[in-house]
Length: 116
Ligand code: 5GP
Ligand code: ZN
Image (tube, rainbow, N blue to C red):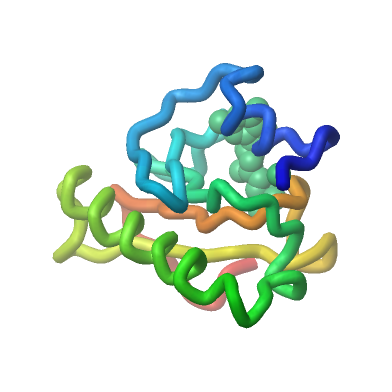
């Protein structure tokens, strides 16, 4: 299931250190190494799925669990009510650089729309 060439699979395996703040049966979350907001967390499935395009019908509970994690972490970080951004980039054209799906959870500052 793990991809030997995948940075986030290596984080999941404990081979590369990360500041992990949340773990469930299906997902983990850790702080982004280059934060774009006061809180910037990456929520990833334990299963290696390269892009949104690779999400299968059987993966719906896994993907849903990423949003459950976002809700929980937003509450813990204290910005549930003021608002936050949860976004997933798909492929190079949208800025995806790590090909193991991850929900960016950003909070602690105002966000404009549309994004760049
Ligand atoms: P993408 O551009 O694929 O949507 O997001 C990848 C994210 O992973 C970026 O925000 C980047 O800062 C983060 N990132 C890349 N390498 C590492 C790493 O080794 N550790 C952590 N914690 N984040 C990383
Ligand atoms: Zn992976």
